[in-house]
Amino acid sequence: VGQKTAVKPKPRFLRVNTLKTTAESVIEELSKIHMVYKDDMVPDMLVLPPGTDLHSHPLVTNGKVFLQGKASCMVAVALNPKPGWKVIDACAAPGNKTVHLAALMNGEGSIIACELNKERAKTLQHTVRRSGANNIQTVNGDFLDIDSKDPSYAEVRAILLDPSCSGSGISTERLDYLLPSHSRDDQDDASTSSRVMKLSAFQKKALSHALSFPSVARVVYSTCSIHQAENEDVVNAVLPLATSLGFELATPFPQWHRRGLPIFEGSEHLLRTDPEDDLEGFFIALFVRKAANGGVEE
Ligand code: SAM
Image (cartoon, rainbow, N blue to C red):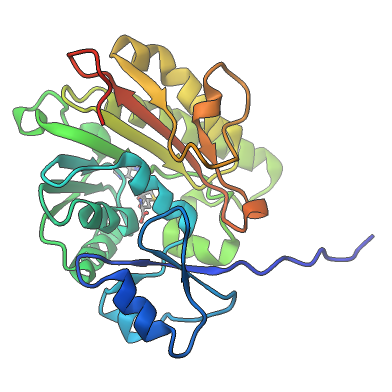
């Protein structure tokens, strides 16, 4: 009693920005001083020993690598946007996933990165500049105000929705950078649960909005929360709408062992990560719309 449980140190992850360099060339440079290997599941993800600090390394400052966790990188990979597609990143700042999308798309096609908060929209612009991507249009505004019926969004094929969440899956020291302070999960139980319920209501609204774009074939919903109310409950609440629009849940990273909490039929499609996996607590749901010919979009 009273003793602190030792926290197992987590490996450090970094994502190679393939718009500027290759995994091989980064490995060659880093292996001169660090032990480094490729992750076996997420492409262009490198793994370094716990405690490795690369914050001021030239590879980071010049945007050749991004210090981005493995769970966070699984989100854009799950969306799997193709070069040439039109894609929306609905809640984009600080922009780690936006620039990952650009890399996966080889810089081809276009990405609309929407961010409500003015200061955070500046951080987003900075991230975009550092990445070297030139197919990203940043928009400082409310995703819910984007009119899905506007002809300029008629060709949007994929949407990444990583909305404000409680951040309960993330270690506190990283929260300031990742989340607006008003959404932090560091208050007493009663105010936490009322805030989580408010976030959950917004998340449902934003996910329903993402599904309403006429040509969208893939929608990823993600959080860095461990709360069911922000994860499985959000997906479960929008499922009737999703089904009526022709979407079904698909299984991102089928080889991954930790799936959604079993609270509804189909929750095994959902993906969770957990500190027990040496990762932060993330949640990913992937909606895929059947193509008009009856096949499922690749
Ligand atoms: N995807 C980002 C990344 O990986 O770097 C992290 C996104 S963070 C979890 C959520 C962001 O959504 C915050 O910057 C917040 O200001 C923004 N946001 C909240 N409500 C929004 C809305 N209605 N429209 C657009 N952005 C919103």
